[in-house]
Image 1 (cartoon, rainbow, N blue to C red):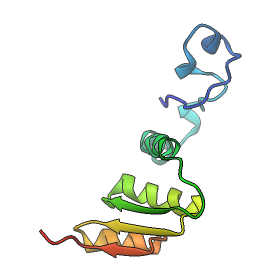
Image 2 (cartoon, helix red, strand yellow; image 1 turned 90 degrees about the horizontal axis):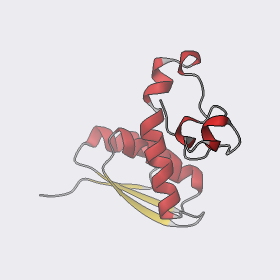
Image 3 (tube, rainbow, N blue to C red; image 1 turned 90 degrees about the vertical axis):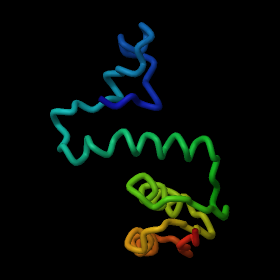
Amino acid sequence: MQIPLFFCGQCHNCKTGKGNQCTVRCEDPESMSFAEVAFIEPMACVVHAMNRLGVKAGDRAILLGAGAMGQQLIQTLVHSGVSELVVVDISTTKLELSKARGASRTIVPLF
């Protein structure tokens, strides 16, 4: 079950210190597909990272790693309006996907 980043503060669980079990903000997993549930935790990490970074429209960003979480970050950064997004990864396949999702430039590092 997802631990929500935001909770209502009004339901019984919130009022008893269990905001992570907020009945208003937590969707019943029975009504969600397995694919939707599988992306909840990684997307929560992406949202947390974006909140910590304080990304604003017009910012420039570099992302190291274009795996599953990196791909979610790419989409979120592009949606946030970054002016330039450089993605670094050793996989050309992942970098091609990064370009398709909005990366400005991709780099394969030399080791």
